[in-house]
Amino acid sequence: MRMSTMLMMMVVFAWFSEPQEPTTLVYPPFGHCMGIYRAGTEQLAMLLGGLIRFDDPQDLACVKLEAWDDPGTDDDDELAVYGVNSGSGHIIYNADMYTLGFYGGYGPGDSQLSAPHGIAADPSGLVLVADTGNRRVVILKRSGSRLLPRGTLTADFEEPWDVDLDGTGQVYVTDRSAGLLYIFSSISDSLPESVPLDSPTGVDGIGGERWFHDGEQEFVMVVTGNGSSLARIDDGEITRIVGVSDMGGETLNYPAVDFWGNVWVTDSISCCVHKLTDELEYLTSFGTRGHGDLELWYPTGIAIWKRYGQVFLAEREGARYFWIGADLTELDIEGLPRGLRVSGTITEDALMTAFVYGPGGDLVYRLAEGRHDAGPLELEWDGTTDRGIPVTGGEYRVEIEVQPVYSSKGYFSKTFTEDFILDQVEIPTRG
Picture (cartoon, rainbow, N blue to C red):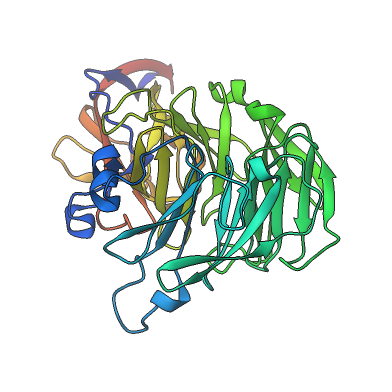
């Protein structure tokens, strides 16, 4: 009997890439917004002549108005955005594409608001406001550049905190003091259903959505426990719940669901936005305290235009405009006896490629190519080519690219590369 030799590849990493900036959210390109992606006190004063300043901003709503829709023109990203300025009792909104308008003022009158919090809007021009201090939900109707009062929802509210509309016209209202989530079949419903919850605040309901990946889905996301948890409600029952501490945060404010069903929820104390799947599995958090481009200053309200992944955030002294991006977090590349293993978390449903390149720069192996859902990523290479032939030793590179599938597709992608050495080692075996 003679001895033969089997070649086994041992992976030795020679160097690692530098940490990259987070890209769960990205800013729109200059050509889209002319470089204007945030507004502060100075911009508000300039547009409204100093009549209103930011004073306890709360929830936001955004919508493509039917009156602004011009088929055949490139206007699909022109949205009406409404923001609640709770301290002054105003709604601030874009009256047209060039000027701002405002509605309300602190007080109990029909055209006034007292400490409002939540807001919702639909394409027809309907706007609903949780007028917390006046214990009512106000119905407004847009007429050109103006908002006009059209009554209130019928219910004995104690502390209405947030309001939302779904694609069927159902209305969701949280009442923090009463510990209830109200579900109205329409704005004229006088006998709403109610779901008991612990101190509910922010709410986002999904049902009959035009711009949603599954038009049959119906569920509600509610912040409960005075900001300590996020619950999913199906058919009037809590089916999933996650605590803010499990997200590494402190106080939850308002949720928003995107096209793929992922849930975004602001955390005003941790100064970030948490992102989870529709099953409330934690994906990532974006932002830290500060005024920089990758920082947030006590964010509260959030609104997402699902069709294109446009995201609006309210802060203590302003507002931000983002696009949904994609990132790969907790990336780990582990050497195996014959190849390598890649693991991490993709923060957004994305188009992804993961390729291994050989010593000459030629493509050796396709680890992944195509669409990947948000969530855990697990890839493994066994040290062979795409045709199953064992590779030789030398310097190799793994390159992973993620690209979101919203407006940012074509404008944004993120690439991770890692260089490593495969040493060829002779190990005697019996043959």
